[in-house]
Image (cartoon, rainbow, N blue to C red):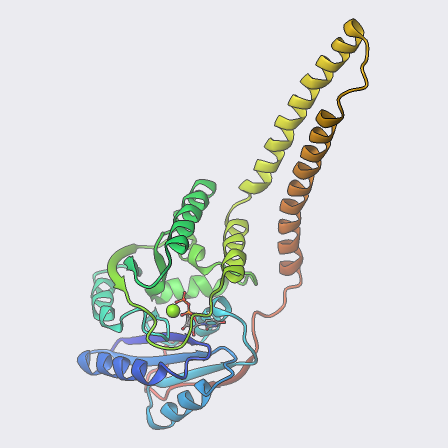
Length: 316
Ligand code: UDP
Ligand code: MG
């Protein structure tokens, strides 16, 4: 019997776990031809999330969990989960039921048809502000222009991955992870399905604008060096313009003498150049920061406890 692992990163999700567990249980009951493993990654929750999961695990053999030593963020929680799943295929799903588990049978079917990565693209984004949608659209267009890897817009982490995709992803040990890009980067046979994304069932989103902006910068800097190229280009253009202006000044001084006016234009040039320099330094700094973080080669996370479900087959 083939085994499907359902990977759920969970951070302060006590309010939704019961409903999630019900829906997942129903999924397993409706698909008896597969064995299921529900792997929860408790990402340092400060509420009762861990206790609830432990409770389920005691009664239910299908439940496995990884308890991380602190909150590491969803990207790291996902790789921790991928390191521990044992299924032939793995479905990554949010705890808050924004991704309907009812789509999973359809994913499994496509997987059986030979696809390695069946990802769910959302056709609607309920409960999100106009501004969030617009900035997200703009960002993806930009990112897509800057990198040659196709990054799927409106696609979250809700997807089914064949074991070889999982193995590929676990080999990528970058600490500042942009998993969304990695899914594309590893390649393999992809298939898209669409769905309406629901609102979060209960509890609160862990995202805020500072976090989103960080995530966006991580996405850009981990998948393209185009900003570096851009800053060199900008530097080039500004230098050429400055050179032309210098010639103009010299010629003007020779033929018309000097006048002491010109304070505003001088200030404008100084401020503009200063701005361009700071911007370029900032961009270089972003990449140096990444180099710094990656050269430390720290482990991505620490596990407090790993409890594996007692299903009969251990495939990895
Ligand atoms: N999550 C996590 N660690 C974090 C933040 C979030 O494991 O530090 C999990 C969270 O429990 C949920 C998923 O990541 O299962 C998505 O989080 P959220 O619903 O807050 O994000 P959104 O749906 O708003 O993008
Ligand atoms: Mg959510």
